[in-house]
Length: 442
Image 1 (cartoon, rainbow, N blue to C red):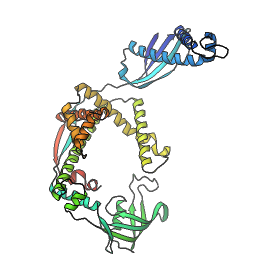
Image 2 (cartoon, one colour):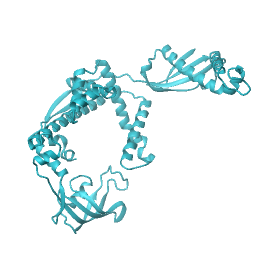
Image 3 (cartoon, rainbow, N blue to C red):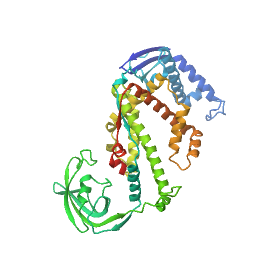
Image 4 (tube, rainbow, N blue to C red):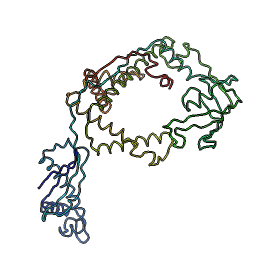
């Protein structure tokens, strides 16, 4: 077998492979002999047909199978000859016929592929991380209890002016440059004031109106708005209120605690559960905030070529996810314009780069999932369920689930290591500031 290697770019390679034709012919004959033992050919008993007849009927299939197998075997051998480790390949090779003149007596083909880039050393001391320092206060528990009460409120018709928290039923008609536009009108539409389900200008315009009143308001559409004909523009809406329903909140008492399924059945027990849940969620979110900053820093301090095949694969995965989200939102058949590859390219490049950098550094540091850390992460996640111990035992008995937590344990250990190298600044703040009021309310 003759092998030569061509470097096409920083990461792209092409192997030129020439195999003596006699090896192909011998393999085809051997395959035909095996097939002849069971082949059914008209005029012959099974296993009695001559090789020539077998080749006449099944020759193309046999040749295709033999060449496919030979290509795979020869490619693997060619990599070894050129001292290219198979694990350094990015994606799968593209096989093709040799262009130009073929050597007499040889079967020649090419294999074009990309290799993984080398990850250069980086200075992690330039990575800056702001570490949130947040504590759950009694006021945070009060706020959460108020949210819970609002979620279970009874709404009664009121003749008072609409305010934050009210449920308003109204008709609206929008005009752009004086003309109605598609989707710009509605009848008896429910607006939960303060829910952020409508544009800020729209919800703000509802406040202060009473049942039966009308008002014309300007509404600014953000530049990133989904409808291109409205993005970045200002429309005019006529609002006509039909009814306003004001919330009547349930009393914060033991009955309310029992209705929420609190085992203790008391307000104190409810407050304890709320605190525990807030602290669990806060711990997770703080970790995420720190991790995201570390990953962003890693992307910034590493410059490297990226395999195009991996970017293309990542774009496909992101596009599939986008299609699924659109379908979940009610778009039965998303059009190609909704999921153009260029929409996902930047994100795909970041994801590929981050995976390459992380896998290299984790291997270089020899990080493995620590049993104690893995168990802690499993137990923390299990606290969100009614029977934490059962969930913990189930995870450790389910390999696929356990692997996810082991990966999370390695990731956490890696982030902690980077923090020892980076510039870390503690940032004390309230829970409300950490989340952002809109996120808490959502």
